[in-house]
Length: 171
Image (cartoon, rainbow, N blue to C red; front, side, top):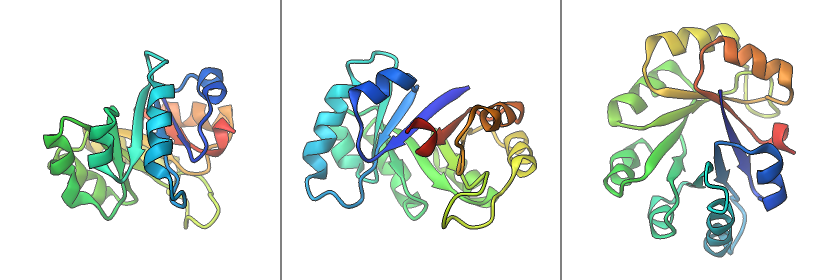
């Protein structure tokens, strides 16, 4: 199962310690996001097996040679634009309808959340809902939301999800 690290303050130590397959630099508040994004991409590319992604800005992701962009759930119209730049696309989703729409528009992956309780993220979807979703689509799904320990990851693995994404698990 693939590991997707989401962070606002990436460090080489963090990347080496957890060896995620994917890593997202997401910092909604940083005025120097483009500069920090460049540093993140350079750091991430030192780990050959890691795919670095940037949040929201597909033009910046393209100019910095990121593997891809992680779009928000309000950016479905940007999927095709990012794909034309040869970027891999992950998009945040919260319903089965959104997942199927992302698949139809050509996204490579989705995050689907929240699976478990996560502060301020609404009612958890749960493992049964995730398992049902995985069975009805071919798009690669990263389970997201409230994932903090190995037991949860083992339960997600049973759903046949492509992987899991987390912030707190990797702290």
